[in-house]
Amino acid sequence: MAYPIGNAHRWARLLGWTTLGGLLCGFVGPYGSFIGNPISRLCFWVAVFWAGTFILWPSVTSAIAFAERRHLPALFAGAGTTLIACIPLAAFAALICSLFWPVHASGIRPHEWYVLTLILAAPSVALALWLENFRFAGARKAVAGPVRAGAAIEAEGVESAARLPERLLDLVLCLQMEDHHVRAYTSAGSQLYFASMRDAVNQLGARGLQVHRSWWVAQAAVRGAAGDSRSLQLKLSNGIEVPVARARIAAIRAAGWLDPLPAVPTSQPHAQQGAAWGTAR
Image (cartoon, rainbow, N blue to C red; front, side, top):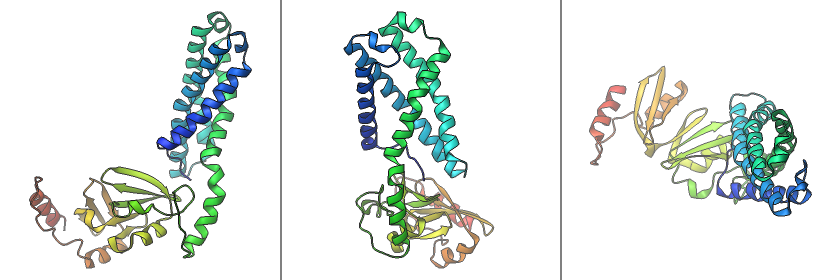
Protein backbone atom coordinates (compact mmCIF):
# COMPACT_ATOMS: atom_id res chain seq x y z
CA MET A 1 0.00 0.00 0.00
CA ALA A 2 1.30 3.41 -0.90
CA TYR A 3 0.59 6.64 0.90
CA PRO A 4 0.41 9.64 -1.36
CA ILE A 5 0.67 12.95 0.46
CA GLY A 6 -2.83 13.75 -0.65
CA ASN A 7 -5.05 16.19 -2.49
CA ALA A 8 -7.08 19.13 -1.25
CA HIS A 9 -9.87 16.90 0.10
CA ARG A 10 -7.43 14.83 2.13
CA TRP A 11 -5.72 17.91 3.53
CA ALA A 12 -9.11 19.33 4.46
CA ARG A 13 -9.93 16.14 6.37
CA LEU A 14 -6.54 16.08 8.08
CA LEU A 15 -6.74 19.71 9.14
CA GLY A 16 -10.27 19.11 10.35
CA TRP A 17 -9.15 16.24 12.58
CA THR A 18 -6.12 18.12 13.86
CA THR A 19 -8.18 21.23 14.57
CA LEU A 20 -10.49 19.06 16.63
CA GLY A 21 -7.48 17.65 18.49
CA GLY A 22 -6.11 21.13 19.10
CA LEU A 23 -9.43 22.35 20.46
CA LEU A 24 -9.66 19.32 22.74
CA CYS A 25 -6.20 19.95 24.15
CA GLY A 26 -7.04 23.65 24.44
CA PHE A 27 -10.01 22.84 26.67
CA VAL A 28 -8.15 20.24 28.74
CA GLY A 29 -4.87 22.18 29.03
CA PRO A 30 -2.27 19.36 29.21
CA TYR A 31 1.40 19.84 30.14
CA GLY A 32 0.58 22.73 32.47
CA SER A 33 -1.00 24.87 29.76
CA PHE A 34 -4.14 25.12 31.88
CA ILE A 35 -2.45 28.06 33.63
CA GLY A 36 -3.21 30.24 30.62
CA ASN A 37 -6.55 31.75 29.71
CA PRO A 38 -8.83 29.65 27.47
CA ILE A 39 -8.26 31.75 24.34
CA SER A 40 -4.47 31.49 24.54
CA ARG A 41 -4.71 27.74 25.22
CA LEU A 42 -6.90 27.17 22.19
CA CYS A 43 -4.66 29.24 19.93
CA PHE A 44 -1.52 27.50 21.17
CA TRP A 45 -2.77 23.95 20.75
CA VAL A 46 -4.46 24.51 17.40
CA ALA A 47 -1.24 26.09 16.10
CA VAL A 48 0.84 23.14 17.37
CA PHE A 49 -1.51 20.57 15.86
CA TRP A 50 -1.59 22.37 12.53
CA ALA A 51 2.20 22.57 12.48
CA GLY A 52 2.33 18.87 13.30
CA THR A 53 0.08 18.14 10.34
CA PHE A 54 2.26 20.05 7.87
CA ILE A 55 5.49 18.56 9.26
CA LEU A 56 4.55 14.98 10.12
CA TRP A 57 2.06 13.95 7.44
CA PRO A 58 4.22 14.63 4.35
CA SER A 59 7.31 13.22 6.07
CA VAL A 60 5.76 10.00 7.34
CA THR A 61 3.67 9.19 4.26
CA SER A 62 6.60 9.83 1.93
CA ALA A 63 8.84 7.61 4.05
CA ILE A 64 6.29 4.79 4.07
CA ALA A 65 5.76 5.03 0.32
CA PHE A 66 9.53 4.95 -0.26
CA ALA A 67 9.94 1.94 2.04
CA GLU A 68 7.19 0.00 0.28
CA ARG A 69 8.70 0.71 -3.15
CA ARG A 70 12.04 -0.61 -1.88
CA HIS A 71 10.36 -3.55 -0.07
CA LEU A 72 11.50 -2.28 3.32
CA PRO A 73 9.49 -2.45 6.56
CA ALA A 74 6.97 0.36 6.34
CA LEU A 75 6.37 0.35 10.10
CA PHE A 76 10.00 1.10 10.88
CA ALA A 77 10.13 3.76 8.17
CA GLY A 78 7.07 5.51 9.60
CA ALA A 79 8.25 5.23 13.20
CA GLY A 80 11.76 6.42 12.41
CA THR A 81 10.50 9.38 10.42
CA THR A 82 8.15 10.32 13.23
CA LEU A 83 11.05 10.35 15.69
CA ILE A 84 13.04 12.66 13.40
CA ALA A 85 10.15 14.94 12.42
CA CYS A 86 9.28 15.55 16.06
CA ILE A 87 12.53 17.53 16.45
CA PRO A 88 11.41 20.58 14.42
CA LEU A 89 7.88 20.18 15.78
CA ALA A 90 9.19 20.33 19.37
CA ALA A 91 11.20 23.45 18.49
CA PHE A 92 8.06 25.07 17.06
CA ALA A 93 6.05 24.17 20.17
CA ALA A 94 8.76 25.65 22.42
CA LEU A 95 8.81 28.85 20.37
CA ILE A 96 5.04 29.30 20.46
CA CYS A 97 4.91 28.50 24.16
CA SER A 98 7.57 31.13 24.88
CA LEU A 99 5.38 33.68 23.12
CA PHE A 100 2.28 32.81 25.15
CA TRP A 101 3.81 31.82 28.50
CA PRO A 102 7.51 32.75 28.63
CA VAL A 103 7.94 31.88 32.29
CA HIS A 104 6.42 28.44 31.91
CA ALA A 105 8.40 27.75 28.72
CA SER A 106 11.71 28.68 30.34
CA GLY A 107 11.30 25.88 32.87
CA ILE A 108 11.13 23.12 30.24
CA ARG A 109 14.42 21.77 28.89
CA PRO A 110 14.92 20.89 25.19
CA HIS A 111 14.83 17.11 25.66
CA GLU A 112 11.65 17.47 27.71
CA TRP A 113 10.07 19.41 24.85
CA TYR A 114 10.98 16.56 22.51
CA VAL A 115 9.53 13.85 24.76
CA LEU A 116 6.32 15.79 25.40
CA THR A 117 5.92 16.39 21.66
CA LEU A 118 6.53 12.74 20.82
CA ILE A 119 3.96 11.57 23.37
CA LEU A 120 1.26 13.50 21.51
CA ALA A 121 2.62 13.14 17.98
CA ALA A 122 3.07 9.35 17.84
CA PRO A 123 -0.55 8.39 18.57
CA SER A 124 -1.79 11.28 16.43
CA VAL A 125 0.19 10.02 13.44
CA ALA A 126 -1.00 6.47 13.99
CA LEU A 127 -4.62 7.64 14.21
CA ALA A 128 -4.28 9.78 11.07
CA LEU A 129 -2.81 6.88 9.10
CA TRP A 130 -5.61 4.62 10.24
CA LEU A 131 -8.32 7.15 9.40
CA GLU A 132 -6.87 7.91 5.96
CA ASN A 133 -5.51 4.50 4.90
CA PHE A 134 -5.72 1.45 7.14
CA ARG A 135 -9.48 1.51 7.66
CA PHE A 136 -9.92 0.95 3.90
CA ALA A 137 -7.51 -1.99 3.69
CA GLY A 138 -10.17 -4.66 4.25
CA ALA A 139 -12.50 -3.13 1.69
CA ARG A 140 -9.69 -2.87 -0.85
CA LYS A 141 -8.75 -6.53 -0.49
CA ALA A 142 -12.38 -7.56 -0.78
CA VAL A 143 -12.80 -5.52 -3.95
CA ALA A 144 -9.50 -6.51 -5.55
CA GLY A 145 -10.31 -10.23 -5.51
CA PRO A 146 -13.54 -10.08 -7.57
CA VAL A 147 -11.98 -7.58 -9.99
CA ARG A 148 -9.06 -9.91 -10.71
CA ALA A 149 -11.54 -12.73 -11.20
CA GLY A 150 -13.31 -10.70 -13.88
CA ALA A 151 -16.30 -9.37 -11.95
CA ALA A 152 -17.57 -5.95 -12.99
CA ILE A 153 -17.25 -3.42 -10.18
CA GLU A 154 -18.70 0.05 -10.42
CA ALA A 155 -16.51 2.42 -8.46
CA GLU A 156 -16.91 6.06 -7.54
CA GLY A 157 -13.38 6.65 -6.22
CA VAL A 158 -9.93 5.13 -6.15
CA GLU A 159 -9.88 4.78 -2.38
CA SER A 160 -12.34 1.86 -2.30
CA ALA A 161 -12.24 0.49 -5.84
CA ALA A 162 -9.42 -1.21 -7.72
CA ARG A 163 -9.98 0.73 -10.95
CA LEU A 164 -8.81 3.88 -12.67
CA PRO A 165 -11.37 6.71 -12.77
CA GLU A 166 -13.24 6.86 -16.08
CA ARG A 167 -12.30 10.51 -16.66
CA LEU A 168 -8.64 9.47 -16.80
CA LEU A 169 -8.83 6.79 -19.49
CA ASP A 170 -8.51 9.09 -22.52
CA LEU A 171 -5.72 11.14 -20.90
CA VAL A 172 -3.28 8.44 -19.82
CA LEU A 173 0.09 8.46 -21.58
CA CYS A 174 1.60 5.57 -19.66
CA LEU A 175 1.16 3.50 -16.51
CA GLN A 176 3.81 2.37 -14.05
CA MET A 177 3.20 -0.41 -11.53
CA GLU A 178 4.21 0.37 -7.95
CA ASP A 179 3.50 -2.57 -5.65
CA HIS A 180 -0.30 -2.90 -5.46
CA HIS A 181 -0.82 0.51 -7.04
CA VAL A 182 -0.56 2.02 -10.50
CA ARG A 183 0.91 5.43 -11.24
CA ALA A 184 -0.89 7.06 -14.16
CA TYR A 185 1.05 9.65 -16.16
CA THR A 186 -0.74 12.35 -18.13
CA SER A 187 0.47 15.54 -19.78
CA ALA A 188 -0.32 17.34 -16.51
CA GLY A 189 1.73 15.06 -14.24
CA SER A 190 1.18 11.77 -12.42
CA GLN A 191 -1.09 10.33 -9.74
CA LEU A 192 -1.04 7.06 -7.81
CA TYR A 193 -4.19 4.91 -7.88
CA PHE A 194 -5.19 1.73 -6.09
CA ALA A 195 -5.46 -0.75 -8.96
CA SER A 196 -3.56 -3.71 -10.33
CA MET A 197 -1.71 -3.32 -13.62
CA ARG A 198 -3.80 -6.08 -15.19
CA ASP A 199 -7.09 -4.39 -14.34
CA ALA A 200 -5.86 -0.98 -15.48
CA VAL A 201 -4.64 -2.40 -18.80
CA ASN A 202 -8.01 -4.12 -19.34
CA GLN A 203 -9.74 -0.79 -18.73
CA LEU A 204 -7.60 0.99 -21.30
CA GLY A 205 -8.23 -1.64 -23.96
CA ALA A 206 -6.56 -1.19 -27.34
CA ARG A 207 -5.21 2.31 -26.66
CA GLY A 208 -1.73 0.92 -26.14
CA LEU A 209 0.42 -2.04 -25.13
CA GLN A 210 2.02 -3.37 -21.99
CA VAL A 211 5.68 -3.13 -22.96
CA HIS A 212 7.12 -4.29 -19.67
CA ARG A 213 5.95 -6.07 -16.56
CA SER A 214 5.77 -2.69 -14.82
CA TRP A 215 4.87 -0.41 -17.75
CA TRP A 216 1.96 0.17 -20.13
CA VAL A 217 2.27 2.81 -22.89
CA ALA A 218 -0.39 4.52 -25.00
CA GLN A 219 0.44 4.35 -28.70
CA ALA A 220 -0.37 8.04 -29.18
CA ALA A 221 2.26 8.98 -26.57
CA VAL A 222 5.21 7.35 -28.35
CA ARG A 223 7.60 9.85 -29.91
CA GLY A 224 10.66 7.72 -30.54
CA ALA A 225 12.86 4.86 -29.43
CA ALA A 226 16.43 4.40 -28.29
CA GLY A 227 18.74 1.48 -27.70
CA ASP A 228 18.82 -1.95 -29.28
CA SER A 229 17.17 -5.33 -28.81
CA ARG A 230 19.03 -5.82 -25.55
CA SER A 231 18.08 -2.49 -24.04
CA LEU A 232 15.22 -0.76 -25.85
CA GLN A 233 13.43 2.31 -24.48
CA LEU A 234 10.42 4.19 -25.78
CA LYS A 235 10.51 7.98 -25.66
CA LEU A 236 7.14 9.49 -24.76
CA SER A 237 5.60 12.88 -25.36
CA ASN A 238 5.89 13.80 -21.67
CA GLY A 239 9.66 13.22 -21.66
CA ILE A 240 9.61 9.83 -19.94
CA GLU A 241 11.72 6.99 -21.33
CA VAL A 242 10.02 3.64 -20.74
CA PRO A 243 12.00 0.37 -20.75
CA VAL A 244 10.80 -2.37 -23.08
CA ALA A 245 11.11 -6.02 -22.10
CA ARG A 246 12.90 -8.19 -24.67
CA ALA A 247 9.88 -10.48 -24.90
CA ARG A 248 7.68 -7.52 -25.90
CA ILE A 249 9.87 -6.11 -28.68
CA ALA A 250 8.35 -8.38 -31.33
CA ALA A 251 4.81 -7.31 -30.41
CA ILE A 252 5.79 -3.65 -30.48
CA ARG A 253 7.47 -4.06 -33.85
CA ALA A 254 4.44 -5.92 -35.25
CA ALA A 255 2.20 -3.05 -34.08
CA GLY A 256 4.34 -0.62 -36.07
CA TRP A 257 5.67 1.26 -33.07
CA LEU A 258 9.25 0.96 -34.30
CA ASP A 259 8.47 2.39 -37.72
CA PRO A 260 9.67 5.96 -38.34
CA LEU A 261 7.15 8.53 -37.17
CA PRO A 262 5.56 10.69 -39.89
CA ALA A 263 6.50 14.34 -39.86
CA VAL A 264 3.94 16.51 -38.09
CA PRO A 265 3.90 20.28 -38.86
CA THR A 266 4.17 21.93 -35.45
CA SER A 267 6.26 24.62 -33.84
CA GLN A 268 8.60 21.93 -32.47
CA PRO A 269 11.33 20.38 -34.63
CA HIS A 270 9.62 17.01 -35.09
CA ALA A 271 11.74 16.33 -38.17
CA GLN A 272 14.75 16.01 -35.90
CA GLN A 273 12.80 13.65 -33.63
CA GLY A 274 11.92 11.51 -36.64
CA ALA A 275 15.59 11.35 -37.61
CA ALA A 276 16.50 10.30 -34.09
CA TRP A 277 13.79 7.62 -34.27
CA GLY A 278 15.29 6.18 -37.46
CA THR A 279 18.76 6.25 -35.93
CA ALA A 280 17.47 4.39 -32.84
CA ARG A 281 16.22 1.61 -35.05
